[in-house]
Image (cartoon, rainbow, N blue to C red; front, side, top):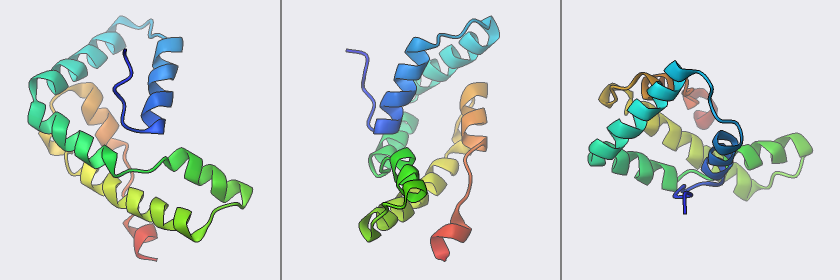
Length: 116
């Protein structure tokens, strides 16, 4: 009922949020503001959703690297996912909430890795 996530990473993050609720009132308010912004700004929300649809499960791909089981297909999936992160980062200027600004500002630009 609650799970409208598009990715495995999103499902795990939602599960984490539900199992570890915030206790800090200020942080709760920041998350509520972020949700309100995404509800009101359907264009931004849809842009984010379209980008997320193109991102493979990066956490699982990275675990394949560390276990030495990554295939060439997994490498292509990782590269394509990293390209999408740049698109997400470009949306940073369109957000107003403190929480979303923080999320977008923490995204890394993996251009150096994608090109090599």
